[in-house]
Amino acid sequence: MSRSLMSRTEAAEYLGIKSQTLAVWATTKRYNLPYVKVGRLVKYSRESLDGFIASRTLVNGGV
Image 1 (cartoon, rainbow, N blue to C red):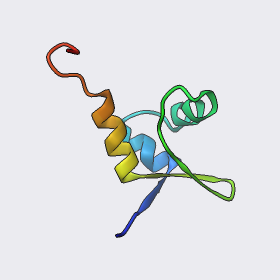
Image 2 (cartoon, rainbow, N blue to C red):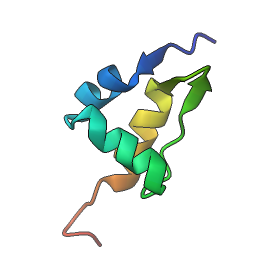
Image 3 (cartoon, one colour):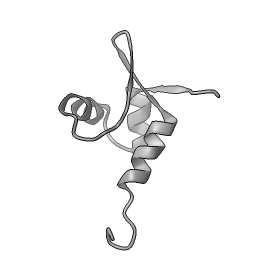
């Protein structure tokens, strides 16, 4: 199984937000969005990002 990891900048672009927003979310633990620490770098898996998008998707007005 190949797990490609994205940088914070790449992950933010994938989500359509600013990379600083991801940094704030990680610091404040606002959302349960898993990330991997590689030394000082923060990496995100595409699977985690897709799961996050799915968990935040509302259908029929949030029902």
